[in-house]
Image 1: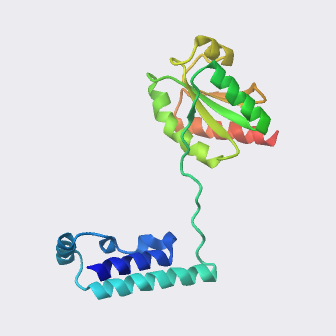
Image 2: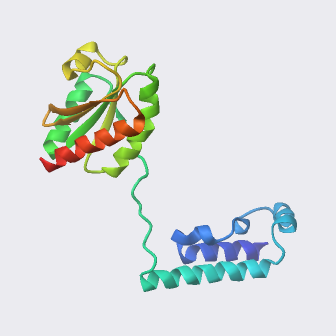
Image 3: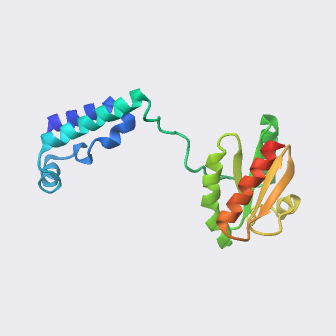
Length: 194
């Protein structure tokens, strides 16, 4: 069993980005669970080791030939940062202004089904513009009404683009989520052009 674990760790250390090619039964486990898996999962352990080594060599050869690109480490989604009050909102605007960045603010409510449905889609959109653009969300029921009024929010969800402490554009998301996401993307791209 020790040889199996050592072989597994040495195969994984060859190239961590392709460790997914090493079969899962080579991971550290007790000898009883290993023997149970061996009965049902594979017939010849040496054949599996050879196959894994061949896969690693093939992937390394592709990388050297330029036929395999490095994995993209950019995030798939970025959690929307919460804004908890008026002073926090002002702080976010100040920081963005110092950095010369725009900010996207999603005004939503816990009771709003469209807001809840739209939030993960906007988090994926946030990943597309990460790190040059920050996305935040405000629960309108958790902040003073004065802040909601100051932003001119009347419907949920409302997605606004702010630059230099001023609202530049907004999308009111009362329709299908994919249309709202496309409108928000367009709003951001139009801001990048100007």
